[in-house]
Length: 203
Ligand SMILES: Cc1cc2nc3c(=O)[nH]c(=O)nc-3n(C[C@H](O)[C@H](O)[C@H](O)COP(=O)(O)O)c2cc1C
Image 1 (tube, rainbow, N blue to C red):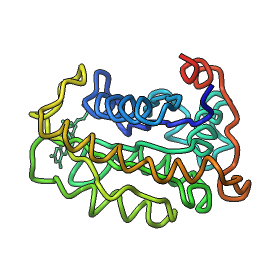
Image 2: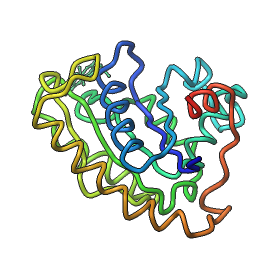
Image 3: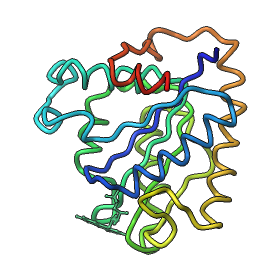
């Protein structure tokens, strides 16, 4: 049984959500390519405490377990809808709760959805600097999808499909190396499994 875990995080509060659909598609392709277990979570999964939490310990046990699982994952797919030219405020608030050293070296595929093409560089100008702060190993290819390119059910345009395949292939060198290297507990704390995460990961 594989022990590699990829977690997808969507920074949307909507359901249905194109951002979640994009994350699910990317995670599913990555997981099948590298034979990993996978889980996708969004901001709603973290519950109503997220907005008022000042630190991770303010979250519910389930939400804390979800964040710990995100931190402990072998790789992440992280996406946000574009709001006013950037990631959503609640997504940034969640990221603000995470220890600055918690994502060092973590392979992260960055993605975003937006209404049109005008803010297609949000991945490069907003998400990539944010994850550079954490010294995460962001994949070279970022994914931006306009509303025309992805449906709520995960149907994607041919162009987006090609970009997704190119991006998820870039996980391979990272995860191949990580499989043989012991993790540093300082930079990659082990996931504290919550029931929803554990159940989804084994599905
Ligand atoms: C408050 C708000 C602000 C938005 N700002 C932008 C924007 O600046 N640029 C853009 O391209 N789309 C913008 N959009 C559209 C969303 O990014 C787009 O519909 C996105 O795919 C929604 O993702 P979701 O289905 O996961 O919620 C905005 C939508 C909302 C609700």
